[in-house]
Length: 125
Image (cartoon, rainbow, N blue to C red; front, side):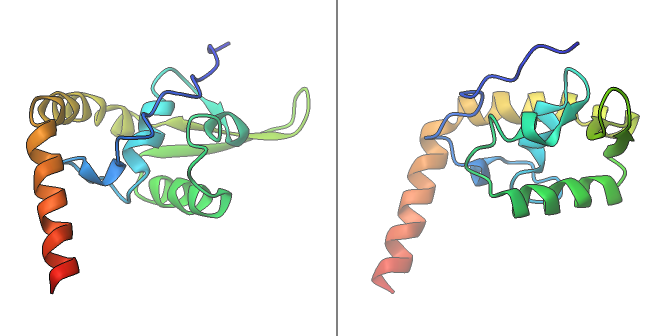
């Protein structure tokens, strides 16, 4: 059995759209991180991804499944439930995601400054 996901796994102050690598959609990299340790039920994914609506999480999971990064398995024992897991292709993204996270951590201040400058220009225009 996999250990429970940390509800604070993703920092509230860290906007996922600052990630330099975009796989699928805004939430895909976080979903992949949640599945890193093994299969998870939808309700387990909702714990650290509480800012994502159920509808958007479902759409993201379907996209990841369609693109071959995630499998969806219906279990009937002991009770019927669905589990999501990384495929070998999805697992191959973990290394690039690690590199992207390290790069973002190193350049965090620059990323925030650029984002704020861009927002200021849009507000003024």
